[in-house]
Figure: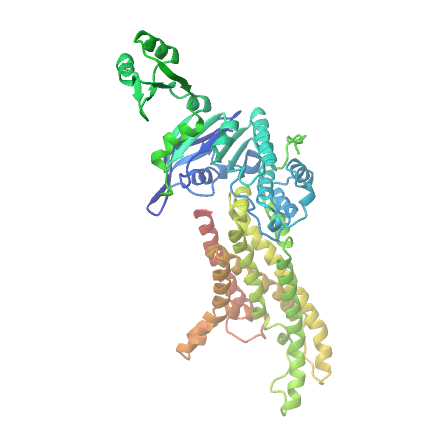
Length: 301
Length: 267
């Protein structure tokens, strides 16, 4: 149930999609895999489930490679792209063909169809599915073997709000049951709500790997607005205190609490017109960390 | 929408060939186009089996005499050329998965990969075998009646009948596996279909364009060699079964190359 990635590198021609990535994904919590487009999320996930051979390093699940498991779908359920089925197939045909490989009974196929709300469309062709239905089909396929580990690439893509809530609840339930849940996403807002732990990747390299709380706690920054910025700055300047100024009359102070700043201002007879503790959102942390690592940035407006 | 997800007891067992073959059968029958193409080939072969004696009888009307005696193999000796359709179908079984992305699902369920390839080959080979046996049986059942209409007959020994009927099945089955190999090596729908057709039908006659001795090379290509199994005895020094073994060798080599490529490549 533990996914372990050690010094994983994957090169396509000259270009390294993933470079020396190392991290561990633990059971019992939802781990998010964040990164800009082209950062290497999909490449990493494909290497974990044996679809791609790493250039170097390794990715193992509970100490073994994915391909060495005799019944891999009972170990890992993966959703790597939605609607990865022939357009003319029915959902039922798609799922039963997967189930057959592992001798999974039809009753289980019925159960996952029911759990993903696809029972009414099971005999319809996959080509007619909306993006959201395709996602749910992919999740159904991932759940077929009742796996202890779930690896999901952008699972909420294309889902309506009800669907997003459903996925979030589902992943939370699975993690609470003790399973390992590893999902990648661009949707920071969604990850902020669901992930317990976040791994951030940029330009093929891991740039953060920590519980979500410590990422969002950030430094305790405080925004201060005052007429006497210079005097205040001199007053509180110290080792461990960072002061930045984004506009005239405003200071962002890192390293002191709001109380400490307020006391310092009163002692110097300085009037503060704003004193706001800033809590870093996941979005801020993400943007700060990946600012230099955006692979395919749009230029200009 | 949420229901309890954990099943009452462990679901599924280890992956084995029974499971993967059943999976490929479900996939094969799940697409109408597969079944339609197979049915079309069956009908074409039955039509071919009836058309040959028919043409023999009616040829006589225009010319002084039929220039050769009727022989039983005429019912089936063009089987290979129609069988190219089955090789193309086999190539499609593989390449359609690459086009739709289903291949990733397949390789996630069967990460050992080779059992999936073997299972695909088994399904198309079994379908082709049945098509060959059924079409040739029907052909031999109705040919004597057609020939008798012109006053012709042929003699068919039981041993030859077995060779020609089972051989039709065996020939088509082996030929179809070449399609699986080509599809797996090339992975692109159009390119693999074209390659299959060109390799089986056109490439063998190219040596003849360059030299009168080109026929010496042509006879070792898959369709030409395999057709010896369904040809009158003495057609070629290789012999009926020698010719089939040459076809089998082609199939084994190409399938092995496909299996190696499948294991080593990224999905």
